[in-house]
Picture 1: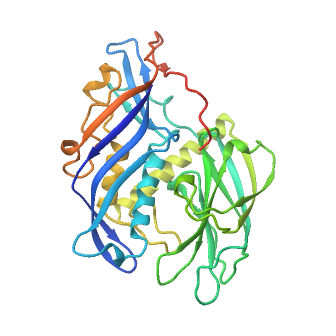
Picture 2 (picture 1 turned 120 degrees about the vertical axis):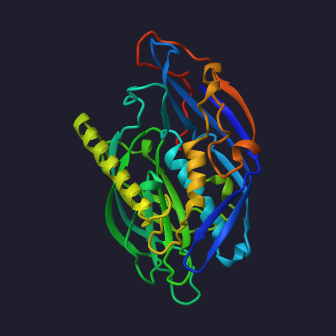
Picture 3 (picture 1 turned 135 degrees about the horizontal axis):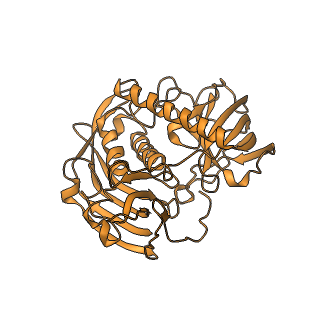
Length: 369
């Protein structure tokens, strides 16, 4: 079932933000979350007839997370672009961990097999970043030093080399990206200007829907760079240049899928180990000099919104199951301070006699993310 989820409160969250030019504690206040939550139940023949729950946020309509940022003992202007960095980090965490097809799988019993509910790799997308043309110059002296980051999941960003002093750079670098849901996932391309003294400046972004790519067929694609991949955030429609690509999508065989799944698990475990060791700070790591957001505060947002949406609890039997600790464990007062509104958007819950089966209400085709 899909549930219209709205939450608002005034929690006390302190983000420890460490960037290249300064370190500053930031208070996050007036948190509001608006999204549609998809809940899938794995049914069982044993009481309570539900062995596991899948929770995810639908990509359409796009989840909205609104909040106010306030510097503690300083000014937000001390770090240029700080608000945008925090916004990008929070959105990356939510998109990477909870936005459909990504999901939170919660077993409701002992020794419950949830393997069929876990997200599995579907295929491999080979992307050659050929070149960019007519980039917008961000430098007062000389020309921009562009590079490209690209990803399907923010957790697995890859980056081209930097081309110095060139608005028509050629990279000809090839990357392989794992696709977990061809129908809903997209590749995000971000072109930056490397800056050794300040935060790297974003020159433009582009999005390529994977379902527009014909399997096993090499294609040459040109994407127009925009201010944002979210059309609602675009305020400047001036030409930002174009990105030229070569792409090919290969669907996995069963054996290739298992190999990719094991490789992905190892990569996630390695990232977890590095994070615990303090080598990396959040899911939006510094890439080529982009200011890094380090500290438990950003992690709190990730844990709270991703580890919670607090969607499973005593209310599960009532249908929506949206009773828990508020929206998770973000900050100290979120569960107590928040006000929650939820209503079922579509359909009722069906039951199956087959153990381990899943039931969800059929949905109309969603537009590509």
